[in-house]
Length: 303
Image 1 (cartoon, rainbow, N blue to C red):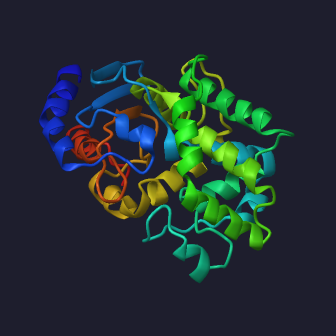
Image 2: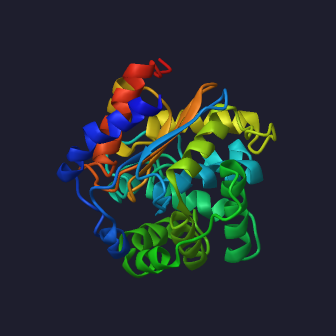
Image 3: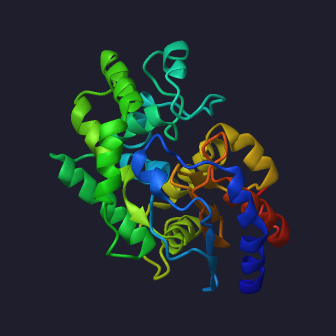
């Protein structure tokens, strides 16, 4: 396994040249575009990694998985999905168009930006700091890493340049879906800026693969919620490339525009990938190619 992962990284690293950094967030434009790493943790206790795994990067949209878990724990399915839908989209993750032409003010799913803003607004807590700490606690528990925190430079970069997210938040306020826009935006920008490594993602993926249990057997995420969020990862987790990814890779996964991919193979393994050079859909270009080969070689598809 170890040698195969090294071969995959070297095979796919040249494809990083075909991708592009998410330069609309200035701090992300400073990442090394040729970076590529992968970590795997299996249910049997195997730990494997190759490439640029020690590099820290921010969760970005991968944090949508965490906020959805927390909102479901706080509010329950009925209330959460009264505010946000369950359907995939063929439009980009930051589309305003979907908000206007589909059920006005109700985002299609929790994995697009508008949906994640709504979900963030549903997390309980009297202050942004309290709500953020609850998100951080869940990330740290799933990754079994108490040192995980927020990258302040990325947070400030997103806060200054997040014009489209601000537009969506105020659009949602018009329909009474989001109440306190500024606190919701602050929480959203901060949880997107949580800093992790490939191994952290692999541990988080393993927790979901074990239906919410960490490696010590603690039930960190309720089992029904772990199942539900993996379903969203399959149908919506790779933006508007989710259908193709399901066909060619076939495992629950969630990407972020920092280049991270969190993947979870039920009852088998968690996988963390990092490759900041993105394709036109906003997914790691080399990372997706690597996962295709990994899934095919190890027969990982759940279908």
